[in-house]
Amino acid sequence: MGSDQANEKTQGTGRRAILGAAVFGASGAVLGLPGAAEAAGTRPSGAGGRGLKSLPVPAIIGHRGASGYRPEHTFGSYNLALDLGADVVEAGDLVPTKDGHLVCRHEPEIGGTTDVASHPEFADRKTTKTLDGVATTGWFTEDFTLAELKTLRAVERIPANRPHNTLYNGRWEIPTFEEVLKWQDEQTRKRGKQVWIYPETKHPTYFRKLGLGLEERVAKLLRKYGKDGRNSPVILQSFEPSSIQKLNQLVDNPLVVLLSSAASRPYDFVEAGDPRTVADLITPKGLREIAGYAQGIGPTLDLIIPKDANGNLTKPTTLVSDAHRVGLVLHPYTMRNENPFLPAEYRKGSAADGYGDSFGAFKTYFATGIDGVFTDNADTGVLARADFLAG
Image (cartoon, rainbow, N blue to C red):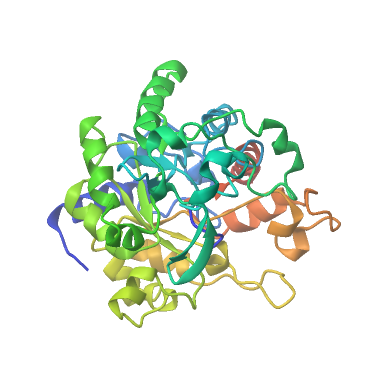
């Protein structure tokens, strides 16, 4: 998932109907809305049919794995997320290599998430590029072959907030998307329950201009492993609506449009000269358009409950009810335990690596009726959900 930051198709309606069943119970009541926690608790994971209907509401999504405890987008992080009870693992943010393989990194620039800077043989690869309109300096996956990237090891991205995670620096390599698909099957067999993943196409317009289109590569691998159907345990997401529209033509997986701050513009809109902002996309009209090709949205938590100038939560918006009205689910991002990432009223002290009252924050967000949440701390999310459903 990104920085904490209308093609109609007949089959899209079918997918929306399936996803809608994950939101609406047999009585037609919206599950997970305020006052409906008891109803939501009647459908545990694995019940209620195939596909997204098998996920609990609210679902706990391991953001880049268990990135609160291990360097993100590593098999160490992914495995721990499952161990901690995540219903879905965000494995991973997909970026391409020079020779066309898809790998899992938060961004194509890997200076902050790998030990590439300590490899003298790659010193001359450091460069400055314009990434979605922003000058970015570092090392980029598209300048490395897969074999070269496999010589690198992952490191903690935000050591000031997670100094304990640096203990694991250098332990794991960069996984490929194909390895993730194999891992998913292995873990499903090992754990005796379906493992779900939630990959994201990163900067698809940028990579398409480089001749490294993401969507076709994603679709090819999903077809290879038989995971391109409407009931497949792979949810695809992107901050660029056109990427989701392309995927809607290529596969039948559940699709989710990610939404950053209200004033921001998806970069494919910038490139196409589309003046709309995220604020336009979350209007009833914008949500109806999204529902024509996707089954859900992944808004920033601030679009669910805005903050005031002091960082305190204000009144919830109507986004949850508006999205549910057109059959979309909401999986907002990102809940983290550390003080700097929490609303001001839930912080405890000022330590950058100190934990605040994340249970209180989870409860407040769950009460809005969201269908799930991305979190770096799946264990905290699982416990917070149990508290919420117990009422």
